[in-house]
Image (cartoon, rainbow, N blue to C red; front, top):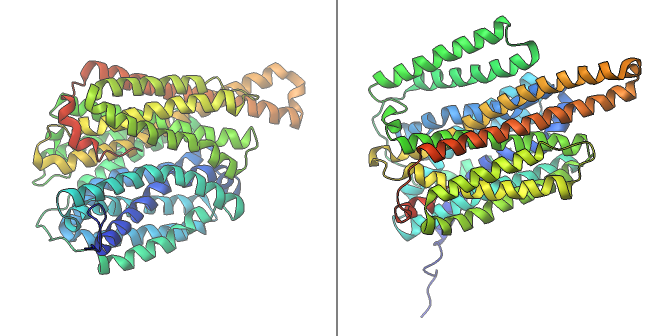
Length: 498
């Protein structure tokens, strides 16, 4: 007697459903790293400054993180499948138009719109799993595929970004999303079931205030690196950011159906875990941003070679996250969080010693592997710690907050690191020019001094990134009291890796 499908496999319709959802998540996760390898090419083509270049990443992560909660709520209000399609189509349109960019403003605008599309598509994709897969084994398998794709997306993005940039153009890191997104969007009604609509208020004002607050804070930091801390624009940005964030808190305290229930922060361990995730993400962005520029500008790596150079990080995270999920049930979360943050801090401190002649084999690969182990352990343990013992009516918000902290932490961290790095670079260049005297007028020597100053700035950035990790470590030791290992099992199986 034969069966059409084995017990361990999805039936054809269910298999198509998870393929569609996982494909959408892969595209969104992939976009977070596919652009990294193309950054030097984008900088040369559109004449970005180094600080301005950080906005190619920040414009996406800020809108993605800032609108993530609103995107998930929109699915409940208008239908998850419908909003999934809307998000995918927005993402596709912004990707296509962004690929034709001829100016900084054009590209950054499209990156922000990509973030809007991702913020709608990503949470609705995850919630569609609950409406398209039966509770139990089938849903757990779907969540496993979803998590695996989320982890693999980072590695695939680095490699694909290198291939497209080197053999086609940096523009193809954006063009490639459009056909995939269109297929997913138009196949969704034929494969995915629609969810029931809920009668809820959409807290649009709360979302606008949160994005304005964080966005202006990031802008103020980056502007300070270019024009100084005492300019009216820098001070004004910080002032309006503070007002916006205070207004956001007031709004969430008084709204009938707030975007963010502030009670989510009532538990000390949960709140501390969110802060640690924010600091860890802030440190993580230093790895890809500064190292991508370093290996291509200083060592002359091609985009493809740069993509391969970073693969050990992504694969290492996956390997150690798998090991961490086993250890989590034996030793609990805190030892993994502490060891993970310690490893990240050590790896970034090691990278802060990079020089002109530092080799990949001895000065880049070892600290990257150490950080990969640390990130794998930290991510796999922070997510279930944040969700453990959370009230059922806040489970969705609690899960989304982990992702929000990743995105917002990355944006804030990158802006701080770029600001500190640019300031250190400028200071070191002036010092080197003074030391060189009249010889500094030589264009060749100026180029050499510029490279030395840039490396110094990146080293300072790595050191500050290490400080973020140390800050997270201190908070973890002082404030996180995770539940017993046995209470973390359910959440650990669906923890995002990167």
